[in-house]
Length: 186
Image 1 (spheres, rainbow, N blue to C red):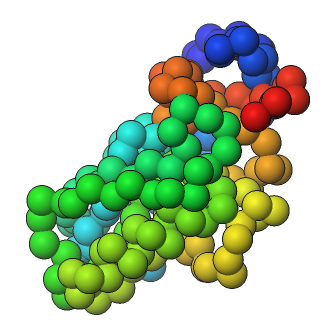
Image 2: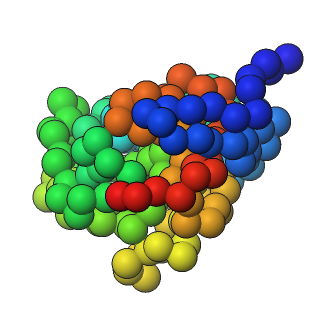
């Protein structure tokens, strides 16, 4: 069904398949099942972090059998490199989350700095609760003991692209997750 190369080259760096399309689909299904169970009878607000989480969000939301609201917010910490800059740029949402259950949809939690900033930002709007659903988690690179509520797949501390994740804006459209093969000089 899915046709993709075993390796791709982006900006002179070589990446190999880490997660195939079937593994991605199974992880999304598991996260959706957990959210459907935990939020049964409620109407949560899903806040999609742009741009990377769009692929995960679309697949996840198709499997959510709850009434819900959908918002988006932009949070960026990588710039054009392979390492988080530590500076997180957050843009505002258009809708209200006051007294609502919020689930932030992330593509990847690496250091946790971006999601920490998102939680601080969204908390200003007095939601009832805030939880995190991320497709990928790098537990070895986390800089805090923050709880990530819903995790698709835990991965090692490698740089990855595909399924919404990019290297300097290239690679988001790949239907699988690729991991850097060549060591980075950055």
